Amino acid sequence: MKIVLSNDSKLTIWEQITEQIKDAIIKGELNPGDPLPSIRSLARDLRISVITTKRAYDELEAERYVDSIQGKGSFVAAQDNAMMREKRLKNIENKLSEALIEARIMGFKYEDLEKMLRILWEE
Amino acid sequence: MNNILEIKGLAKNFKSFALHDVSFSLPRGYIMGFIGPNGSGKTTTLKMIMNLMRKDAGFIEVFGQDHVKFEREIKQRIGFVYDEPVYYEQLNLKQMTSLISPFYKKWNQSLYEDYIKRFNLNSTQKIKTLSKGMRTKYALSLALSHGAELLIMDEPTAGLDPVFRRELLDILMDVIQREENSILFSTHITSDLDRIADYITFINEGRIVLSEEKDRLYERYTLVKGGKDDLSEALKKELVGMSVTGLGFEGLSDHPIQGENLVIEKPSLEDIMFFHTKEQRHGD
Image (cartoon, rainbow over all chains, first blue to last red; front, side, top):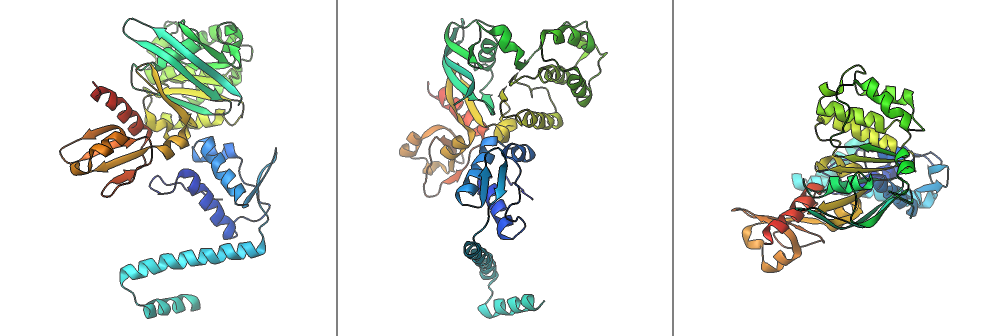
């Protein structure tokens, strides 16, 4: 698992943690049942407050990405297939929107973008 | 909540300085940064916890026990790193440690020796030849080697280079891997605390300005910047402190603020401290 925190991010530290863990789950880098580091050891590794780390885990638990088992730690939750699909679709949509913004800044036309997408697709 | 330290209504009067109604508490398992400018009452408060100075009023409980009545028992379980530790200057480290260690029932000699090695200290060096940074490292080695549950440190990073300051943060994070341990850490160098502290207690001119979770502070406070014309009377009322230059202004608000033309940023602990103390200077 990889977590990189940035001081320049608009997101708070705990949001950066939840976003990166969610990303890893959606991309399949983390699978259901995989253990997450304990709150205190993650706080140590990132050199951040225990409360901040706890908040990130609480949030992940509330959104059902993570199950916490008293005395055993936190694990990636079993993901509902339909929900997972939904999340992945959302993920693709987000990435495409990002690309669109860049393309508009560059003054691309829709056709240019389509051409680019086709080339990437066939690679 | 299970508090390792509880202070209520602490007061002390000196000729030129007084502590007024100092109250705050530290839950088990967390790090609290105790911040404030020089001379604001940080050291006085910490000395009173350790009963090195008598209080005039108020109560202090450590591990749920009165800090004077149970002083001996409590001190077994506290690691204290003092701004300027007083040792017998003519002794070397080994001799000094052999005088101190028998006091502690849970003294761990091999752990102590590990720290001495890790901090590059020489056991045969005389105390009087130690630099300020080396003294702090020695004090830390003693404080970390008797199974203390509460670490109280007065300005531990003063006189330390940035490399060791970072290492110290790692050591502190190691200490609280045990959920029953807590750390109270006074400093005026807030960058050390910006990330690792769970709670912040801010004292100024002998009074507690705030004591709360650090993340809540960051959510609450906003740093506002803008041109001179953007600083309306209404906006001034929203600010706890500001600084105006020929080019514009910068101010701190203790709640979220919005406004056209204004640059809104998240303040650092240093900003929060700076503007709170600045307001007082301008208030007269």
